[in-house]
Length: 171
Image 1 (tube, rainbow, N blue to C red):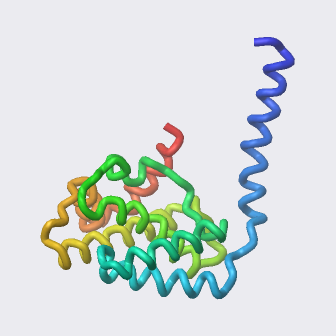
Image 2: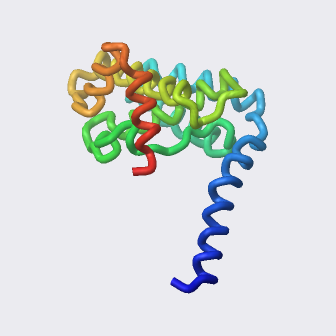
């Protein structure tokens, strides 16, 4: 690689490393209306995540999250592992619920950011609540990847699990 090319790559890398956190800290907080609406939707979705109403509510919640950068969780496949690929009944809804529950936490805690372990734990707790509601409402729901997260939650290790997953996001 030519020296000039290495310099350009080094400058681009430095920009990405240092500009991204600065941009995140300058992100304006979500509007009060968006925050209230997201909290309301997240609660309704968790009660019955497979209902027809939940499908509409989920779309609306995700639209709010996509429109408000301060309500977005940093994407990390390590958080839910193979659940990202599962085609089991309810798996797609749980993937969305992680984002919605984390967004709900960020709506309730406007000074938090989507990179904190607490935000990730809140998202995983929402995933657990939604999965448990699914299982209560539809006996056909069985997602081994979600069962593992529920077990981690019940063992009281969700914080350590989230911290480890966030530490391994780059891999």
